[in-house]
Image (cartoon, rainbow, N blue to C red):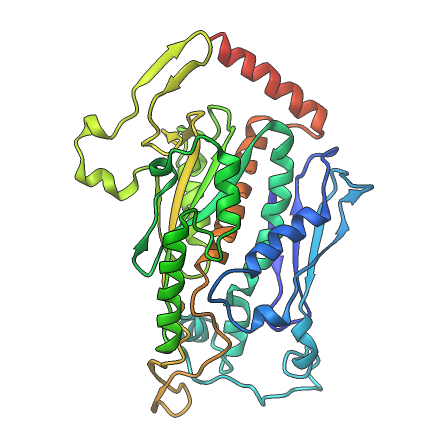
Length: 389
């Protein structure tokens, strides 16, 4: 499967086209909209979230609630476009430079993009590089989520660090009931399972906001119910961990990624890092620990996939940073477009959905076919082979 997105932050809409989705899979628009709503929530979000109420429209590839095998077109209309029609017009007879941007903001794509594409209005860069683009990527991931559901593959995301306030990871939590854990996460304004840490994180966000500053953090995505063997060891670009790393780092403002123990393996001996292999009649092959985060040799192990990403503090500050005007070359203090004090809770939703896209792609590479019936049969046969290995 593959997809392409298009659209600007203040343009008329965001669009995605997904190609390669097999036929016969149920698709629920309300479930996609639920993911979009989660992306817009979270303590510390800015005014844009009060303007937009993202809703998806499916324009092709789904009929009577099921995929047809044709390309799927997804659209999210930008409600704020009504105020930007002249500024974002495609008509060369209606040029409006009233909101031209000549002052690049530190930490953004503005200056690099302007130099690369040789444009003198940096709005051409910031409109596309904006994190607004993640809304349409969440819809793509929400489709992937629904494609995986029939095979018992589930996921969740949560926040384990905001501004240095640390909460327990999935492996540290060791939940006996995942549904209860998910309910705790969903009830938290910062998507943290620990209520005490939730309050401390909110205080950190309030502190940053009061100082005209921003805070970043760490999000964790967990996917369980995966069969062993998704991905491959035979080529660098087929390794699932490599593809997941690229997906996480493609999210705006994300600067690092780790699987399982991640960077902590540098502090331990090999005997404390690797997952020993066991076998019994009930489970077959299994691992008693999951330090690898569910991937070894670029392939899933059958244990939960655990991946984390770190998001930097948003660079648009109400306490502006220094920069240089591209016209006059004079120094100035960077201008402010609408901004969040903290978008980490929302970013956890984005991370979950980009991970689900890569997982679904690996799944359908392994169990390929044009229809749900074909794929279901392939999975059934494969699981039997694995069981009898």
